Length: 260
Image (tube, rainbow, N blue to C red; front, side):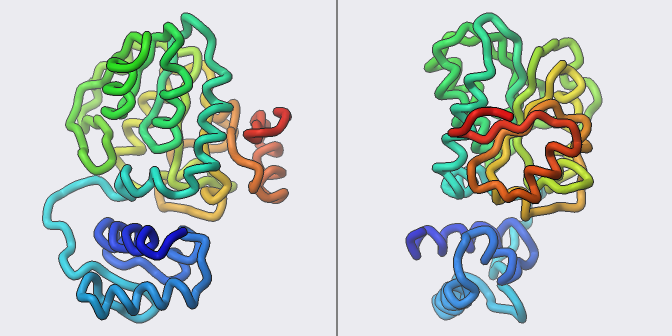
């Protein structure tokens, strides 16, 4: 990853979180600790962030109430090649005439490109996916009611009736902040709430995560692993992670390989 791109992501992370640690940035950017420390030192010298012990923080934390988590524009640029392969493998699971749900997230958005030629009934809480499919595709599109969160491009409602309870889907495709033995994790309670509602409307639940998500975690669990039907990931997934998914009873699809 180019230095300029690393700097952009580091600044976005310090804006989204009170403090980001060096170890977190090393994993996120797949760079050495020395490289990340050099980046943080440079941005500190440029008065773009404040260096703190073991990490960095924003000079100007946001005052408005938004969602916790990485902005969509930043997520798109992280592990983009792996996400494109996952999106293609996920799209191959869709059949003409189906009703499906697509959650928000950068991998799910990439999936939209590969299903635009199909006639599908799609519900999505992603404003960008809805806009893309309406303009470029043949799909019928439904969105829940709620507030649009610009940075994450999500439509979420704090109220129990957001219109999703009347929609039936044969499959739901969704992403996550992280995945571990306790389940699928997200960063914000509103994202968890919105995703949980959608999961309840689908017969099959298909998680789309690149291999880096197996090393990330959060404090909020969206669902347990045994509530999933399929996990789609990339070829860099570790043997430990493969065993964890298979032990939960999920079908595992590794993009670019034969499904198992």
